[in-house]
Length: 302
Image (cartoon, rainbow, N blue to C red; front, side, top):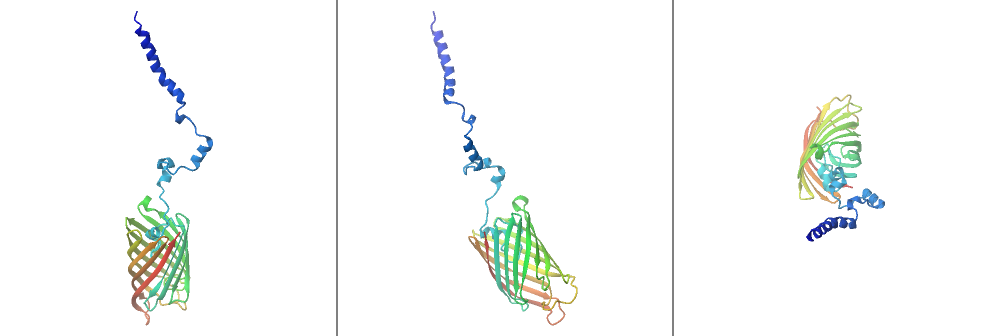
């Protein structure tokens, strides 16, 4: 009688049953177990810093970190002396001020100060003060800046500025100013451009501006560039000049190099250039004048 048959049957039965016994001893698979309720709530409310970006959601993973240092704000164009920025940056509040001297006889000392606060990431409110030595007293500006397009989404930054100016282009009455601003960066180089239209109140004067700046970043905190801005009368004045107002200019242009250095939240800015003015007057004050202008300033972002 062959006794090896039952032995092999017993061995086969043991081999089949061992994996099942091991799985039963280990218990259910880990994924089948729900974590305790407090642990699950904590994980949902505060995901771990080491969790993969995909687990945090594509939207959160795509959001870049906030940039509120002066160098980032400078590269956005916020601290350019004569060009409006198209982009509403990550800063909550920014402020900058410039002062200097213009050698033209109709100019003299100049001073500008602007404070801007972001209401949301696409809207900012701004208040400013401008002073020109040749004019009696300073003037106040107040307005809103809107960011429409973003370069990372649309290939270009595009924005609109609307503001009230207590004094317009070489006249004492106020005006409403509307500006279309665009900008784009290619790695270390940024280009910024404005088209501006101003509409006077009392004398129905109209004027336009073209502003253009280029800025190149050296290292992580230095910037050099060129800036040009032209201002021209579009006509339409009614009545005689207001008492105390300087001779009206038909054309005005400033152009020259600039440089800045960023130190944490603070940026230091300097600009020099030539300033040409064409006076629209048949009297002795008419004609063309040219001079030099030099500006020093500082900006801060928080």
